[in-house]
Length: 87
Image 1: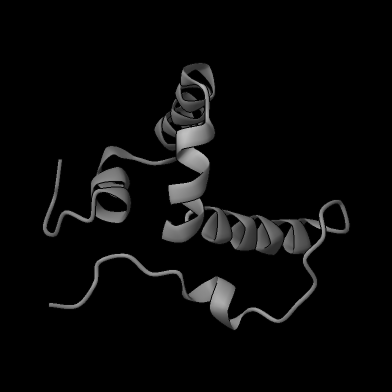
Image 2: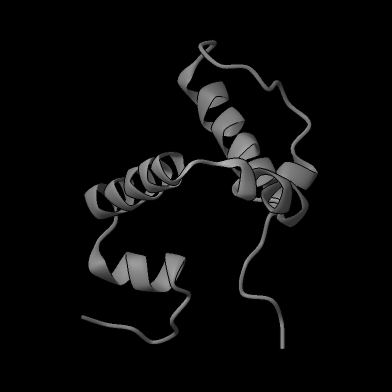
């Protein structure tokens, strides 16, 4: 069975990583940062060091962004990776 999640962008991107240069560079930089941030090895080091408040803040920020910008179907398809979901 093939993995459901991918982090190819960070592996393949060879452009500028900077913020505030342009919308296009900002979007690509954010993709690089988020993919690097979600690396299993980094999270195993970082997560135990976060306070309960920091964990709650991060969870709420990510949840709020998905609720604001994804339809229910997009959430189930792209985040939960549920095949054939329709609402």
